[in-house]
Image (cartoon, rainbow, N blue to C red; front, side):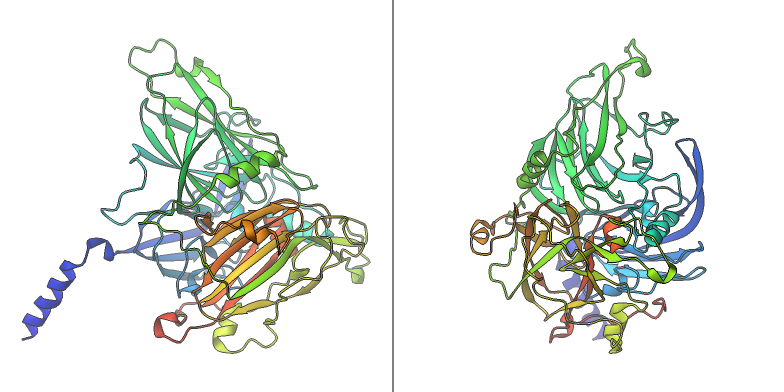
Amino acid sequence: MASWLLFAVFSCLLLLPEPAFGITRHYTLDIKMHNVTRLCHTKSLVSVNGKFPGPKIIAREGDQLLIKVVNNVPNNISLHWHGIRQLRSGWADGPAYITQCPIQTGQSYVYNYTIVGQRGTLWYHAHISWLRATVYGPLIILPKHGVPYPFPKPHKEVPMVFGEWFNADTEAIIRQATLTGGGPNVSDAYTINGLPGPLYNCSAKDTFRLRVKPGKTYLLRIINAALNDELFFSIANHTVTVVEADAIYVKPFETDTILIAPGQTTNVLLKTKPSYPSASFFMKARPYVTGQGTFDNSTVAGILEYEQPKHAKTSIKNLQLFTPVLPALNDTNYATKFSNKLRSLNSKKFPANVPQKVDRKFFFTVGLGTNPCNHKNNQTCQGPTNTTMFAASISNISFTMPTKALLQSHYSGLSNGVYSPNFPWNPTPFNYTGTPPNNTMVSTGTNLMVLRYNTSVELVMQDTSILGAESHPLHLHGFNFFVVGQGFGNFDPKKDPKNFNLVDPIERNTVGVPSGGWAAIRFLADNPGVWFMHCHLEVHTSWGLRMAWLVLDGDKPDQKLLPPPADLPKC
């Protein structure tokens, strides 16, 4: 009888489609110090497995990942798996003091999560202080076995990760800025896969080269891991077809330049020329700038090189090298047109499940502000005035990082004195994008917005002109959301919703709130836990442009947060 039952169960399992099952993949990431030389400058930096950038993590939709992170550096560390939904597994999300206490020196933690209903390009990075400047890498999720891409199968897939290189220690940079209240020093170079390229001093040998064959299609998995800069990217004499953003398939469109904000990913198809072109081509990226602060006004370049035929007479080093024309640094018109082209694929297989009814509507302001100097130390500040320090806020609350992890405090019922569950629904009204108010001071606090399980949410995020309007790439942990509307000026709650796209809006995890404008998103709060939301410009996050959502458990067992793992780090 037992053998018959076993056979019956096994037969039923065989009848299920193969893609219903993933496998368990084990990775070990050793966080260690590592000497790296760029721009003729050698420094010891925090790296993953002695690599900069970190190694590629590959999985398939449906797989379980068990990633052991071992901390062998003096700094506390935590890793975030950017864009992974973490359904009921918030303990593995990674932001320090939000879902976990950081991993201390000499300790380890296993991030345990399953990839549910996701495929595409994501990435991982440190989520404490500014350590993500060097601790980052691609997280590639392939479709289930037998499930094709909704576009032509590429000849080859190539991750391209943009980053920023600082000759100085980034931890020292943000410590100094925090102490003085001024803006932090900017980077010395941008990089592609850790390499600055030939336009920088002493860097010709440190150039990313993409070698291709004529007449082939390549899938470029582009990730912006830069700390503080949105980037334009273009390949000379070539166009690309955008097919995915933030691991969501989009309606394909052709372009010669993409815009990508920190935290975002974009997959593009590059179709090479049908025959050998007897030339090479620069691939360049430089910043899109909207703020008034200083920035790294430089350009990173890689080189697209075609495989030479045997009869080629000219050495590859002597070929003509074409260069692309990138938009102007402040070309908001181009940025807006590009963003408006992004639409969800919304096919039968990959529908756009936009919440059509909304249970709760929120309006948050996002922008800069000031804090008073620390007069205890007789301090003169380097902020907007010598008596103020730079700050940033959501709805005028500059988020104070707790010393205990929010998720642990919530789960254990010991949240008193750790956080307040009363984040404001609406900020104090003013002409958000007009003449700024005289009082630019922000309030401070560790405030959470509480949502019942399965609440459908509409959130309008409004940029402000306080200390200058600026684009803010806002990232929401634990969810994807639909960008149903964007615009400039002050959001009009009567007129603007009439133009919302509720059919095929782009679905993503990080959206650029336009400079001097607003973005409206919708999402379903179907993931219990505490979920960080913050600007992905690291300087703004450090200044307090961050908050968290607390999504309560649902009634059913599969609607509740899983218990914490035994090895969860303690504060």
